[in-house]
Amino acid sequence: MADVMFTNVKIFDGGGEAPFMGDVLVQGNRISRVVKTAYGGRSMPVSGAQVIDGAGAFLMPGMVEAHTHFSWNDQPSLDAIQRMPPEEHILWCAEVAKRYLDMGWTSCVGAATAKPRLDVVIRNAINDGTIIGPRYLAASQEITVPGGLGDTTQPHLPQPEFAFGAIVSGAEEMRRCVRMFCKYGVDSLKINLSGESITGMPSESSQFTEEEVRVCVEEAKNWGKRVAAHARSTWSIKQCVKQGIEVIYHASFTDTEALDMLEAHKTEHFIAPGLAWLINTSYHASQWGLTPEVTRKMGYHRELEAAVESMRAMRKRGIRILPGGDYGFAWTPHGTNAKDLEYFVKYVGMSTMEALLSATAWGGPMMRMGKVLGYIREGYLADILLVDGDPLMDITVLQDKARILAVMKDGEFHRAPPVRRANQMAQWAA
Image 1 (cartoon, rainbow, N blue to C red):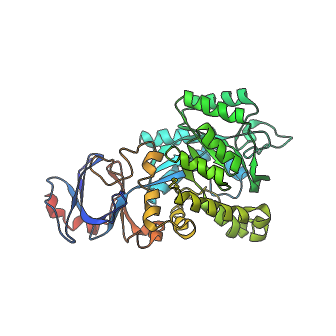
Image 2 (tube, helix red, strand yellow):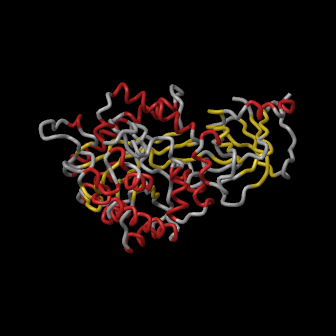
Image 3 (cartoon, rainbow, N blue to C red):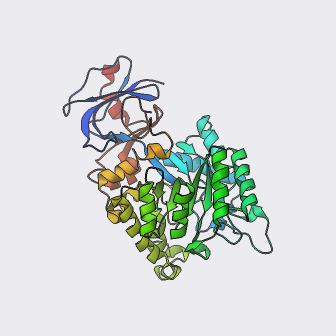
């Protein structure tokens, strides 16, 4: 692993301050030096380092995606995702993992997988170098109840292999299910605490008993695992706080009590609202039969309004909101994930600085790596992007792969900058 010096770059370090011109030295898999310089100035060269003259390009931490479904295969239904044969499905996941890294997402938090071990296998293959992908936390299937979100079995085909989720009924079945996924080696358990309008169970409904939820969290914690919840309804959000469920996906329908509870425990929870799903399902899925008229009747337009209001309220209260929008359906394809940052600015009222922090500094704790991930600082892991353009001026530049000049993960280039840049100062390394 060669040492790398980025010089003449505009550094966004993740601390919330204005970017500054400077140099960044990477040695091994860590950032060993960050130096401020005058614009166009250069610090002393480092013997033996590959020198990258950024020519004023924007250097920032790699991004963290908080709600990732590698196994969602850009199809229009849960059945179309789950019924993909396992051999093709694992190959799909491997290709998608690379796609995320291509787009600057150097870390991803698995939110659920379509088959019991897909996430675990992909995480392990990334870690041992078999495939290329971001840092990854592997999730279980979605745990649900008979007839709930994720139960896609038919009366004449009740076999669990035909279900999108893992179906349980009662506390002891929940305990057995959690233990099974922990045996497989997941990092987190996903529980569907509320419905989803497209499946027929309204988003404002909730499907588990408090005892079932309690057992899920208790057993997961016994194994040292995290719990994440699909929680659109007000009751389900309150259950997340009450039961200590760390990751809350969606959180669309809140009331004052739910917001007060979240604010009182805001350092203990992460919110990934999935606005991309609501926006695109409501207005950009007509090709698949989901016209605005249809989705309005389903309740998605109303939910989008409620979700935006909830996120605006959470932002004002200092509750952490992170990107991750249920990408992997036909109308939210993988690779378009940076749209979330645009939506945060457009709908939630975040500044571009806040949106960028949500995808960087706030992602370190989400990955349980808060002391070493999400910043351009000495001693931190070298997950680094070099961008043509300033996301603080135009947050949409992160949606364009061609504008992401370089992607470094763990001190190694996944995609090196253009040769012309790398060679501009080659004599320094001589």
